[in-house]
Image (cartoon, rainbow, N blue to C red):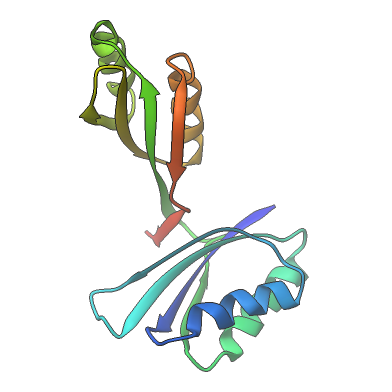
Length: 157
């Protein structure tokens, strides 16, 4: 099962490496990692998605994270009400006749065309994992030439 964990850390050199090292040293795979400064530039917010089969593994991850000197707080969103989102940028095949079809698709999702050329369009979209998966299925009809995704971002309700 995938678990989403947020970690507030001091924004210092090497903190990301220490957090990632903690996971790799114990054989845990990070499925997704997003890191950014907070409103306070001395603090960063990490959203980590990790595959953990049982609660003991997850509990061990949380304990180990809390032991790191630069970690301020650890929040496990697994059993907590939260909102999560992912962002994608996709380059798709496009002709002028596709404009209406794309408009119909984007009426169902939070997305828009951000760049047009003669034979392709670059779109951006945001949503939860299921929404992004569903959107990508619809975009596959156009032919996705390139795709980049953020990791999951999460915030408690």
